Figure (cartoon, one colour):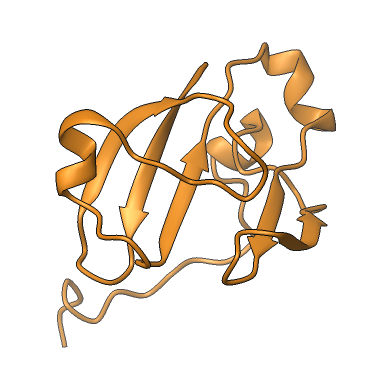
Length: 105
């Protein structure tokens, strides 16, 4: 069982719940969460993980795409610089950004 966030694309509802393994192709909301999403709605399910900072270098999230019957059609592992690493977090940048809203003319 793992904690997930569910976003309903059709009506904009967002909720936090727990994922429990079910049948292949089955996405089912139980309890109060079932009142926020309608059968047939398109949902985005976000999962999270905890890890040590030393593990961030090797972590690449996986996106899973499904069809109308919730069968996996594509899996895509993201290989790009992880924004949670210290180098990115502390903003090592080579250019200065200009904000016209705060600049005197």
